[in-house]
Structures are given as C-alpha cells and as structure tokens.
Length: 255
Image 1: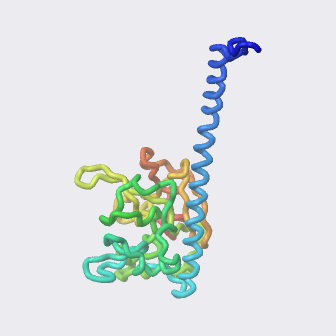
Image 2 (image 1 turned 180 degrees about the vertical axis):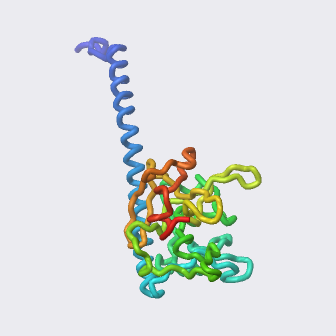
Image 3 (image 1 turned 60 degrees about the horizontal axis):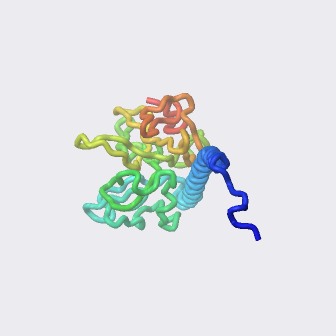
C-alpha cells in the first residue's frame, strides 16, 4: 500500500489561482444579484400600487367617482387626525380611513420594500410604518390644501373630470428630507407635492428604484417613471420631480 504522502495535492500556486477565480466570479455575480434584488423589490412595489388601483376603482364605484380625503382633522375624535392611511395615534388605527376599507384595512399595500421600516423617521409622531407612498391631494383633494378659486373652495376631484388620467399620479413613491429645529432627517411623506404652487415647493417624489419612481395613475395602472428631462433636486436622497411642469403628472395646470 502506498503512503498518503505519495498522493498528489494542490500546490500553493494552484490554490491561489482557484481563490482568484472564485473572487473574480464573486465580483461578477454580486452586482448581478444586487440588481436582481432591486428589480424584485420594484416589482413588489408596483404590485402594491396595482392593488391600490383596484381599491381606487371600488371606492369610485361607491362614491360617485370622487377621490377620497387626504386628511380629516379632529376625526374620529378631538385631538386625533385621520389620514388616508389611518389615524395619527399610537397604535395607528386604519379603520376610520375610508379609502382603506377597499384594501381590507391592510396597511401593507401602502409600503414599498425598497424603503423598509427603520430607514426613515415616521411622520405624525407614530411608532409604526404607515405609508411610503404620497397621495396627490394637491390635485385630487384640493380641500386638504385649502385651495380656492374665485374666492370659493375647490371641491374634491372626480375621476370623470380628469382629461389625461393615464398620466396623472394618484400615489407615487415619496419621501421628505428637511431639518426641523436644525436636525436633518429623512421622513416618509403623506403628500406628493407639485412642482409649482403658491409656496416654495419641496420635492417629495422619491426616485428609489435605481433612478426611477413608481406611481399609480388615475386610470388605475401602475408604472415606473424617470426624471423626464428634469434635474434631481436632492441627489443625495433621490428626491425630485417627474418632468418640468405640473402637467401631466401632478396637476391639470401649471402655476
């Protein structure tokens, strides 16, 4: 019988070559796996927005084609406010939110996996996730902004009034970077702000999907949108606007 020492083995050079090949393959595969993960998260985000689109259709069918309120102050009791995602209480109660009734009060439809809980400071003083999507209340629910025309409050929009519903945003990926009391923070944002209006607009459209933002349009379809010729307002936090005008994504007219 031959000794174990007589059996051939790997030389140091051969081992180094094998390790180098493995490292090279890993450097090629890891970015691809990261890209695949980002694509999967974006697909899940779009799936959630499509579910919100179906809920929107149900709400319209039972509410004269009107859009839902963004904010109800002092509802359901004094000291509490109800947003489209529920109350700003701890814990959050989604039941007073009329729109969420058409989602079986499932807040998870309002979450984007590319912006997981723990990566932002929640709005409203709550301690749980509410929404990663901003509602285009500026256009669809003008009373939420106190908008008036010829001295009269503008009413909530109806879907049949919209001239280009396939382009007008209802929900979109949103976030907000600001510095209350001088402390910079990144928050989720309930509102999807327009480009122009009666104040200095702050971008809340969040391009979190490899330079794109996902949005639900008023015709019920969800899709990804790029900058469409606009510049990113806050590249460090991927905040900006789609396009260079309120029309056609944020409002029916520019200001």
